[in-house]
Image 1: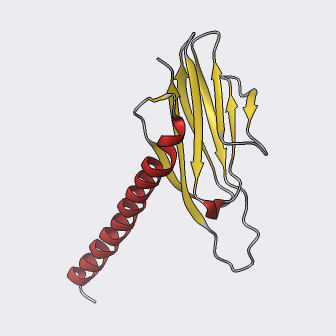
Image 2: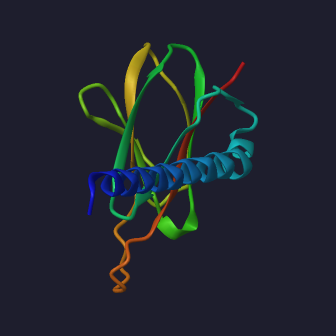
Length: 146
């Protein structure tokens, strides 16, 4: 096979992968806007859309700054295929401040001092024996009160 054909095949493969990635990102944004943003009320969405496609058993972490005296709502949305997603709120030293384990995926709180906190989201491992790992969209939204 000549070099030109190899380059064309590699470029085609890259474009296909990029296309799938963009499509998944668009689906996540659509899921977030339709299913998650309305659940923030009466809190005001901070305007950041934090979403990703993850597979069962995977964990994602997002660090954010929370300001003293402000009331916040953390909302984690996930597609049903992922199962019961768990999220934890951690302080700067990794100490667990909250977990939604077995509870709703909404947490309302305020902080005594401005600080950077980490939100860790984990999708449970799948118990299917098909050899196919389910994946789906997770979304993290932060709301605040006026």
